[in-house]
Structure formats: structure tokens, C-alpha cells
Length: 185
Image (tube, rainbow, N blue to C red; front, top):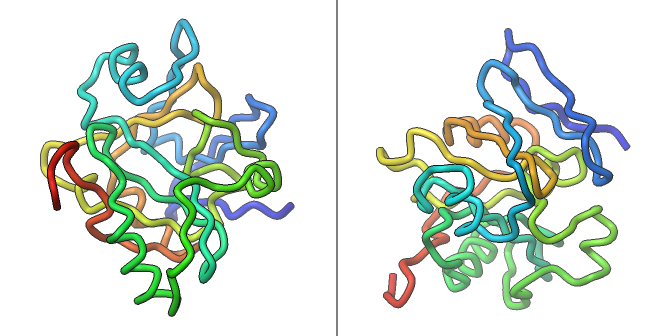
């Protein structure tokens, strides 16, 4: 499988071969890759273990759609997925959106070598999927975001502006894809 390497001009890449779900491709000057002492299984657990606010943990969902196939949606860990806004963006960007699964099917997950807790936008298997990024990740209080590095015990911290680089390699949609828990947005 040909990987799409997400590297801005002038930066050296580091390939992290750890994990059975493919290589992760990173810019070593822009990303801080670290390990935890144990596996983490949720955003809450991850932010606590890693020592930063839940709002700085990036939560990623893999969804099946009728118009765009599989997509990835990235939101802050302290927010909920706003499916209404995702559907609206699908309709606007891909001319559809009537069928949207709350999570990807087992078949899609296997095909893309995904496992719960290991989704990462920089994975060689996932970086070419359309990426839907919540605008909440770019707010001032997010000088960095963290997310897993393709395994349950490694993570990466990075400036969320790096996600803008993905538009060179895949469809990038930025919108209001997150909402506050218990509140309407």
C-alpha cells in the first residue's frame, strides 16, 4: 500500500513501526511522541494518564457514510460528536449524507486495520480518508492536542494547525462537528 506522507517542506520524517496496524508517519520537529506506562482505553483515561486537560485530548471516530465511504471525524475529548453537523457537511461536500452510521462497520474497521482506541489521522491506512475536523480543536486554549499514536500505550502531542496540512493529501472539512455534553449546539 502506498502511504501518503504528511510532511511539510523542509521537515524530516520519522516512521514509527510500532503496532500491528501499520506505520505512523510523523514530522519529528512538529510532533512529540511519548509512551505511557499502561494502555489507555478512553479519552478521559488518556488525558488523566498523560497529565493534560480532557479538552486537549483529540477524540477520533471512524464513520461509514453512503456518500463518501469511510470518514474520520476529530473532536476535543470533552465534547460529543454532532452528527447533525456531520450530515450537513457530507451533503454540502459530497452531495449526500442521508446514510451515516454512528460508527464504522466491523468490515470497514478490518479493511482499514482499525481497533478501538488506536485511530490516528497520521496512520498510513487512515490518512487518505476524508478528515472532518471540529473547529473547536483550533481554539486558543488548544496550544496542543494529544491523541494515540496508533497503539494504546503511545501517544503524540502536536499543534492542531498541523491538521491543515492534510488538505494536500485528502479531503479536509472543518466545521462544528462537536457539541457540549448535555447541551445543544
